[in-house]
Length: 233
Image 1 (tube, rainbow, N blue to C red):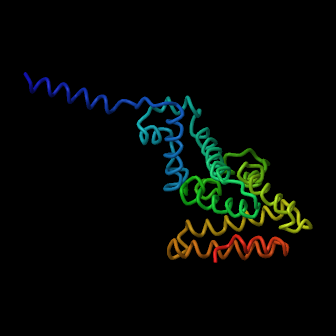
Image 2: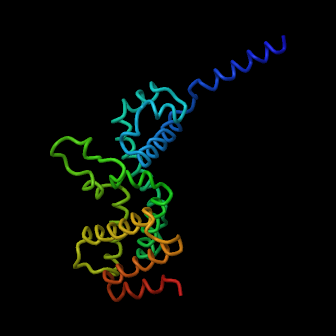
Image 3: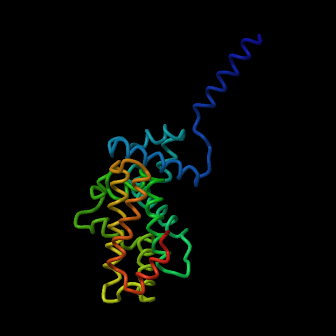
């Protein structure tokens, strides 16, 4: 009799395990998008499906359709989530008295985001998913829209503050300087994630050398002096 009871309990436990988990909508969304970004990073668009996502996080396909209306909705949400997470890293940087210090912090935050969330970073740069396939014909390339993202505008504001304090030349357009700095950090981070550097120490040293070299060509004499005061001995 005890054996029959144990058998029934085990069956009930197994059935309970098979059922979709009941978790909050906010947590489920985050978990689902994390799983989707990993699928894209490891296997590309073909690896992503509503059924696979449901299985990966232990929920139902209906829950995914309700939240995102299908695979295309998940992809759109992924793109938005990636930039939202990057913006969170950027906006967490304190704004000290020196805008140059703020600028340096934003560059470090960009890199930190990419290293912590490589699958989201790869999505932003269209490395794991050809985002253009999900756009209407003639639409602006999504990469052009990066300049309107919160994370990019934070960098723009820091550059503008440097120019206001005459640490950077006012003869250069703020947008031009911002684009160059964004491209500089992006290039380093992309190579770092691809395994270009031998180890983390080498990547750290080269990131510092890169940022120092690029900024030195953009700073005024006043900016050079302020920048040297911020650098470690």
